[in-house]
Image (cartoon, rainbow, N blue to C red; front, top):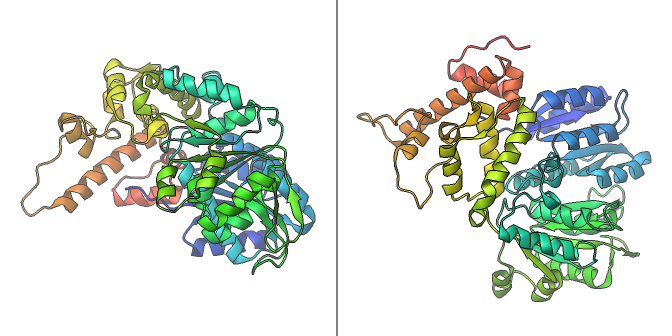
Amino acid sequence: MLPARKQILVVDDEANLRRVLAAQLGRDGYEVHVAEDGAAGLSFLREHHIDLVISDLRMPKLGGMELLRAAIAEDPSRPVVILTAHGTIDTAVEALKTGAFDYITKPFDQDEVRTIVRKALRTRDLASHDASPAGDAGGTGAGRFGLIGTSPSLQEVHAVISRVADTPTTVLITGESGTGKELVAHALHESSSRAKRPFIKVNCAAIPKTLIESELFGYERGAFTGAVGSKPGRFELAAGGTLFLDEVGEIPLEMQVKLLRVLQEHEFERVGGVKTVRVDVRLVAATNRDLKRAIASGEFREDLFYRLNVVPIPLPPLRDRRSDVPELAAFFIEKFNTRLRKQLKGVDPAAMERLLQYEWPGNIRELENVIERAVLFADQPLISIDDLLPQLGTTEAEPLGPSADRAAGAPGEPVDAIGEGEGLKAQVKAATARIERQLIERALHQTTGNVTHAARLLKISRKGLQLKMKELGLRERGDE
């Protein structure tokens, strides 16, 4: 399929630093783009698909904090890492509370950069399996607490949020990936008296086990190799606000007892430190694992489970709240009409029936992705069933039929008969090339031949799109 090389944007007014970071990250296998100030960086972000932003704090034209806020507004799930000098640590900490993923102190250690970049991109990948973050759910079409739908199971979630939001009680949100656990965590924070204080989130599955303690509790200078200065942990950053521990079931056993102590005593020590730090933090945790089964297998502490599970909020999968699908689809159509400059009116009856019948293993996130592509490629005012294929294959409950045949090739085309001497790999390669060609041609048509904009819509780099066009024999058209 289309290339999936991670795209990183480095924004700094120091040319030498841009060169050093671009060289290192390029060697690590990323495709790196650079901008000389915040204004140029923001302009680049609006024209290209970028997975991670690394930005200096102090720059001409547009500073790092302003770029951070604009980048979060553009895409709340895209991590931003701040570069800072020792004299601006306080500002960097403020950036974390504003929504930055992390910060790196200059002069930086290459291993530290490598670790933070991997952690940030891993967090973004994991977030892509859950429903849109709360910042993406705002607007006129958003439902109560940012949760869209009126099904009885969702109304039960609303009722629990209303009752426990403005309390210090620990909450454990459970559910499959894509059901909206982060949305619920945001709702609990925004509906409480802590709403004006920080909301700090940590995806425990994205952090190497050896770093989880320093990530949560911070560290002092010299605590380990590469600790060139002290750094606050996520508990300190969330002081007075809410700390959201996503994938809490992935915390290693040796760390679970330390987390339990913080929940009970509201105090801890930084790694390498002796001073006890007291914090007032409301903890919300989430997991898609069966923690009771993890307890039985010795992978999770029972006492920590009961401390986390004071108020459980189980989220239903989308297949158990199918009556919400039309409202969700309408919300996402409105959202992507704005983002993609389209004017779709809705979904035709046959396509809606398909949406209602589908099992949605990826839940709301999968529905959002399906609607985004359908809006992008639809040529009529209403999304048709052809616009949903080949995205929606057959479910286990459905027999293989014409829809499945068409999903294997380009929409509207039957799968070619297997020729003599051809095997499965050759057929898959040919079908993949047909689908890629169709997606590229439709993206180019949608952007009137602008390769840069088409690459952004397809979420690949401009260079990657040009290479794929050359491979498929597609002539490049006028760009700018």
